[in-house]
View 1 (tube, rainbow, N blue to C red):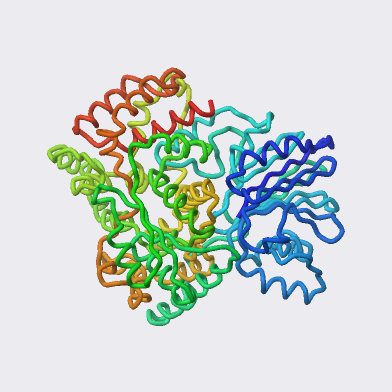
View 2 (cartoon, rainbow, N blue to C red):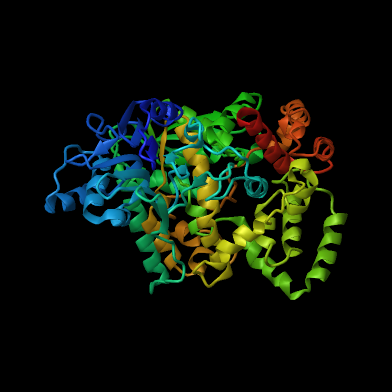
Length: 626
């Protein structure tokens, strides 16, 4: 696991090794074990290394035999041994044992189609001096990040925005549409970044740059198709899932450094740890993070799972008094990102790193096995469409108005208010209304003068565009497919990559094996969502591994008690930073409106924790980078 940087000058001018080193040093956290720089004339690549496999000879950037093809690469290729054997049979000669060199020889053999052979998480750049091309690629699910900018003179790419920012020619104009989407989604969706003219390479895409003419070609090479249903019985589906997930875990245990697992006490991480224990001669090292607030604390359930598999278990709790952690994380993410579970994810990664360098996680199961509560809300709220929209808005608006206000999202009233809101929404905007805590109306109230001439595209249009292009036939599976293309890479996988790599920890997610995603997509929805039961086939396929207490428990999720913190430990910080900060002085937000939101929240008249958190993170980002 590593960090990568690349610069190619399209006008033929030489690339400065000093600039490469400056950019590379900005992401030292991604690879503290070593660094490498290669440059030749108008092209240069750099690399930060976190040593996992082939500790002695796996240094990068790496080249082919004659020095015409160079690569800088971040990730793990889990099938690299099989690919190596095939390439050796075709006459390729290897000088290392690392997976990086496998990609180089695959590229020599198959060109841009090399990505089709890879099972893993990756982002890489390949410079080809003969073909005069630069090839960028990102893994199918979007586990590893890649950002870039280009103009008529240069093409520059890196793992993270803080590396790009070290380049003096990076465009720095703030993208107001990206800010608008961020407030609703918690993240800035690809291909946008916080900056105009700086882009994220989307998951499952390759970008080819013709260095002679400066032309670029962006191509999707894979999609998780839900329209191709397998001809399998439920029992066959369970057995196949068990077989494939077991293999996905097994191949992710390859490592020349200590390895462990995140364990939350939910069924996903419990299954992963159970399969790890099956393949491990020593007790699996497991790690859990918790809160003093009971409704957010899963440590008790994690202990049950740890006891079931006799793991070497460690746990810690989150200290809400340390606000400096938030400021530090805003710097690591490089652009506004406000999924609050980044806090426990970072702390979990930090103390996991004390004992291991690689950790397996259960991320991704909810998207591919219909694990989210919101899928059930969408399923049953569709019946409300039989009532005219104007009537629904009136009826459910009255019901919501006479109910006590929700003061915390995870409270019972919070769930009821969300259901009523979903039922009163239009069909096109309903899903964004469910997943967003910062609606279009409130955003427009909050905005300051900077947004006065800005014509926003409603965030639901971004989600609806993906939804309309999905392959699934069932409306719920269309939402799952939409999440796989948006929420999963934009929020979940971004959170895990940045938080873990900030601690120099590699996280591997067996559920993100594309074979598991394809298998889940090929199953009919009722295998995954049976009545009100979520992840039905996953639960039953591994029922023997999951303790009964965990199998029957309600899904909790990796939440954070923001509502309480904003009324207590962080109350003063919230007022100070939002009301006296740059977002107000630079006229991005209205002080009067935000002051009202803070007052209503801190007096428990409403729960505005999510919009206030989004605004606070935006403020911290402005303070650091504006």
